[in-house]
Length: 506
Image 1 (cartoon, rainbow, N blue to C red):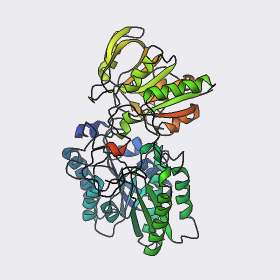
Image 2 (cartoon, one colour):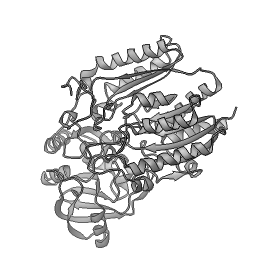
Image 3 (spheres, helix red, strand yellow):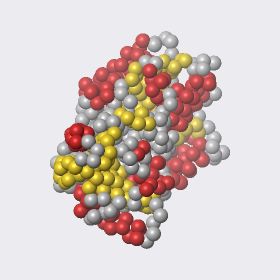
Image 4 (cartoon, rainbow, N blue to C red):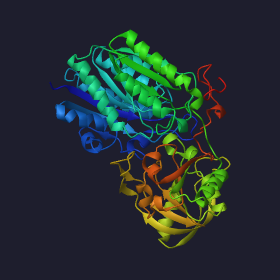
């Protein structure tokens, strides 16, 4: 049977402590993601991409479902989403669904789950409340969520199923969209009746570096969760999600959660309780392991001298634009140059002004410039001045082939490779996380051929850089994303929430 589904997407990961807000113009231009896209163009833009709505579209094709694309919009992680931006995109979604009233059987939304707006702590919950009021209590609403969602009771209440990614780096984004479609199909065909829901919130915040599913404890926890869905011990369990949360969000419902759906309330409760207990039992394993830039460089040197056959990757975790940071801090850059590292590269540093100067000067020229430090005024993040050689220039347009950004046509504006004292710095004119080798190759750098590779990323880089890494070191250099939650000035977090695993309570 052919089902008719309205589809739309609205994505933002909000770091309420970041210095810049997500305004409407940033959603319109996209900031590293495709620009705001409407109507049938959604099929062409997102169909080939590793993104949830792309996975939903791909899974619907062989079933010959009738999809009605409305709008998809995203902006790079930052501080609060402006009221103008939220209302603009929300209205497009609601108007699109309203125009289809009486002609659709369900609604699919590609959301993030950690959006905070100037007016709403829970952006997704507010959007879903409006959609539910429009379509009524019986129409299925399926939602894909980012693994870092700060899931709220309202998000669970107003949707029929929330399904989050299970990998970090997020390699299963398209797979997650397909999983939502299959769950909605079971509801639409009557193969499953309306599902009981169980929602549990965990009592401690989890650092992002400890959420990586390539390492423990998340690696085996996610395996366990998948096994539970197919276990005879949990008959009628249809879906589970574990969202470790996004801690730099000063909201009441910030933090990790578990959601279970089943044919009966008793089974949903049992699955949610059992898995929540399994996570809490391993609380102490969610460790934070950060090194200062100088200590990280010294450790890298020791590994190289000991005969490391691959690169040492230094993750500048707190200047990751994928967490709302500015991608222009200079602490790690200054240390690499000061420590006379002979063979290193670092990217991507956001500085359109310097990129333009480099393009005007031309390849081979030497320029004395202050790079970075334009957006965050803290010690270790300020402009770094030195004399650089312009090694190679690029227009910022290229196709990503790594597993995280796979299929994404990057448009980063003028780019430049600047060389100083053995360090190759990759400058971009758009803020985007360094998570794909092609971002370096565009300016003539093959990352796997460098002894030290610096990435302004927290975990996503692991998807494309693990194969070239002898070791990965997390660097604690100043940035707008603070990995140590216990140092953040929360005001709205719920009382009793532990600010770190086995840490002090708020």
